[in-house]
Image (cartoon, rainbow, N blue to C red):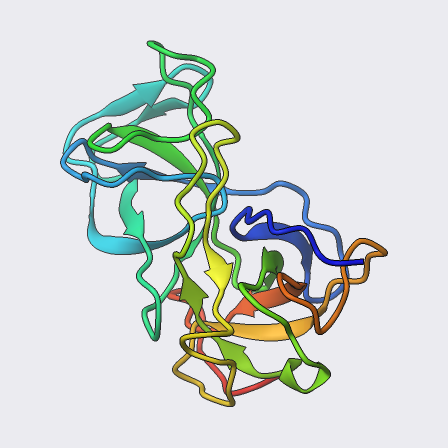
Length: 205
């Protein structure tokens, strides 16, 4: 059975030691000056600055000046990643908004644990020999304003998986599911972040 082409970004599923992901996250901030929409499953990176004013949101609490590192969407290739968006603080003007519109200040919930394993859809097929190799991301698809999910995928076409420590991800295994066919287009795989701002990168496993 062919795999479904339905990108969802990066989805935390477990820790490397086998423990299930428990939903933990840290809060970050995106300022109104950032003119890019953000979606659940988007990889993000710290910008090196933080909130310059007190920030609060319903259910999220109040954050003093400098307590929320600012983030941008992570670029593809050899660029580092701090974590993956798993949610957003509610916005009073639209409590049902499940993504963040461009140029909108918001508190962002990020899974930034370097030991978390993520599920991601590849933009092509993953061969058995690709397991253990490093890979990069590709933004072929836009995020969905309906589901709120990212369109980022693992790149198998323009920058194929390789034993390259500078690449962003490491392929851990093909996801074990009866609806996921290995070596077919849009294979779902388990990956860890290799170029992580909170950990050292390694080549391969």
